[in-house]
Image (cartoon, rainbow, N blue to C red; front, side, top):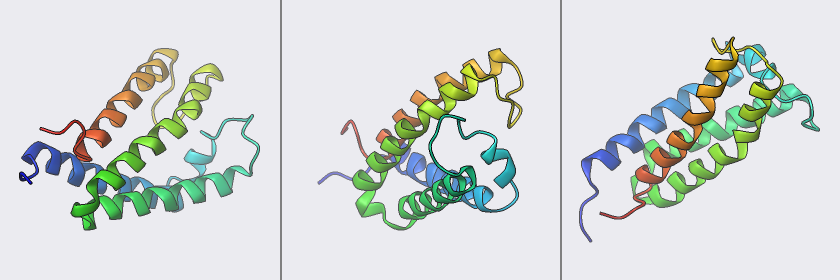
Length: 131
């Protein structure tokens, strides 16, 4: 088995730190901001969605950081998580909801193109494709 390329380890560590921070912010200082991002059509209490997604993000981030031998599982799970929340990003654009500096249609549209990049980064951190 060949060693993991440095760029994949860096992606794993950066995403792990980013997700741990993002999850913590869901539960603390950005809680209200995240509640405003939950689509109106989503059939659940907005605060529970924010708390649940925050816990999931902390778990994913911590797993990426602490379980490098499980990077394929944690990275692909993170990619699936990013795909699962993408409809919320689309709703933010369609409903013209401001948040996190995304206060114009152009900024909200640009964010939509960032989500596939996050999915690709999570898969790269997972070791997909193999080098």
